[in-house]
Amino acid sequence: MPLTPEVQLPAPPFVVAIWLILVLGMLGVVLLWQQLVRVFADWGAARRRVSKRLAALPAAGLDVWPLLLVFGWGLALTALQMLQPESAAAALPPSLFSLLSGSLLQTLLMVLAIAVCMRHAEHGWRLLLGAAGSDRRESVRAAVGAGLRGGIMLLMPVWLLALCGALVLQRIAWPLEQQQAMQWLAGGQLGWAWVVVVIFTALVVAPVVEEVAFRGILLPVLARHGMRPWRALLLSSLLFAALHMHAGSLLPLVGVGLGCGLGYIATGHLLTPIVMHALFNASSLLSLFAMPG
Image 1 (cartoon, one colour):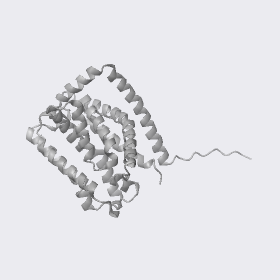
Image 2 (cartoon, helix red, strand yellow; image 1 turned 90 degrees about the horizontal axis):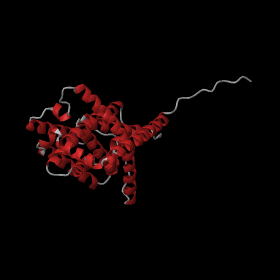
Image 3 (cartoon, helix red, strand yellow; image 1 turned 30 degrees about the vertical axis):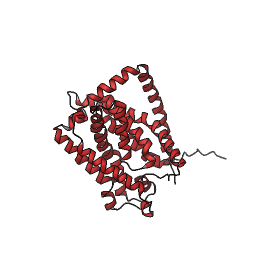
Image 4 (tube, one colour; image 1 turned 135 degrees about the horizontal axis):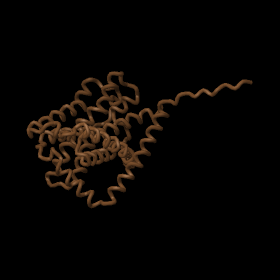
């Protein structure tokens, strides 16, 4: 009886996604361990570097009242959403009105507030990004590389924080639900045009706008007003997490905020936290493919 060669079937997408997530997570653990060893080898010097670099960030002198108005509006929406009873309509695909009145409107208002802050202080966008210098191409390359390394290092701690947050919510009998956009993507309820909009927003729009607002402007301004570096990092991260209006994401997003803040302080270039933020969002989208059915 002749032997036929074994045919290797391609792995299902969710298997590839699981392996990719595992590889990124383990690589992140190795990189994070190496970084922590370097930091704790001279903890005092590391703290002094953080304080010095935070004080030197370009947006430290900005007037941030427009951003504070947007943050206050977002926190009020968060409180209202938490008090509102869950309805069956929440699982339905979004209408144009619901998107315009929700996260998209918040993003547009944040962009407007950032523009007003910059205009008021006559700061250039290039200066805020940290790209003003003689060798801009090299600084961009270094910032993106640091963002990729930092984003990978961020994954495992954030996953652990997400697990802790889920356990706490279970303990207090809080319903565990994905963010609405993730529910729509996972359930296949969106048309391809909306899928493109959601993915583009998650990978490009949100990282750019939120990092400019929270790390580029709010973090150095908080430090300027006498707040110690770790307190400024923590408060800006708490605001960042709260404005996402999702209880299950609170702890992991605080971790993302802290990591992105440290990444920005380390390089002085906003591309670093932008890349870290985008990589985290990409891993969240990838996790959808790791859950078949």
